[in-house]
Length: 405
Image 1 (cartoon, rainbow, N blue to C red):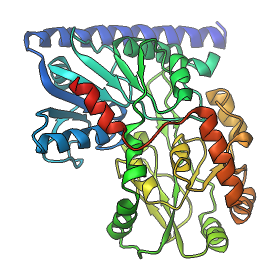
Image 2 (cartoon, helix red, strand yellow):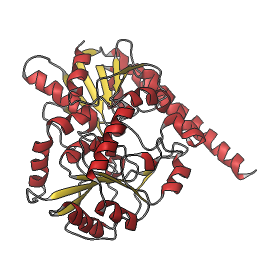
Image 3 (cartoon, rainbow, N blue to C red):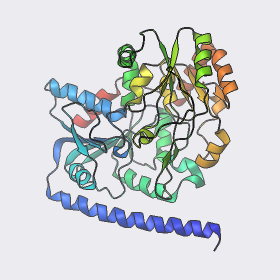
Image 4 (cartoon, one colour):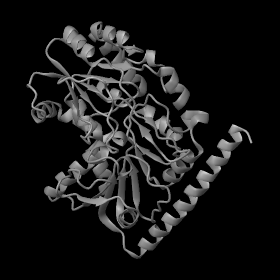
């Protein structure tokens, strides 16, 4: 038997096992239907329970809690989380994301709000509403059908099943309106509310700017480069793994180049993907510096973006969120061809984006030192117009209005 045949057989066996497990899980959901649905109950989650109080569900929750305190609404929020030690507002009930907890709370809630897929085998009852916020706006790396032959069959099955449950997907651009069809394998309603997690960028930048420096004992005038690499791994062909590789960015040289180009004193905030931080993995840097601060345990990426002065990534979609409020963005993709071979063709030609692209440290430092602010501003305006971005800082309000309807 050839290698390809063995691989196909392994995948088929894996899919059968996952389907049997999903069927067993679905029975628990059906058992929980003896309990009534509470229309005032809202269940939320981020990154399959691996995230904390962050991303778009957080900002929807903030708006709900605000209205509850004002007496305008009386919703009860339950949050599914793998680590119940994570911090949440007192008004939110934290629940460990086990099968029975998940099945009970999802089966008895009027509304579900998540930024990632539900677990395979989840069942929804008639009259319940599932709002999918997703965890990316404009994307660099391909998702769903855009991965072509590199999209694993199991991932397709899980995505397809979850999308059948979704009632509404939130969008912040006309680009997302179109991309979500094949990206999420979704044919239902797409609502132009904007992206709730982007609200903080428009409404709380000054507040977060001060807060972040105070929390980490930094001078008020220090400038922050947020480095947020994406993760590797996550295959659905076998037991899922998420890998933290060694960072090759020259952080000392990067800080020096930032200070030469922009002035002031700089430091680097390192923020890993939530699926890495949930596994307590660390990015190996081989470098020690008091200017390099790991903020990966913070559950909310966008409050860190709001506090930053520049953004560096390889393929994270968060760079577009920094870009929409004018923060200088830089791409460091030293494994570009390997990443494309593993993930699939990127959504955009990297060199046609507003961000200077570097394939090695020498190019990165040169891009920082030669950063053209006026050119960046012009290319940003053209790009945001091209993708039809309509974020305005009021997405959370619109989502809660949507729930209340």
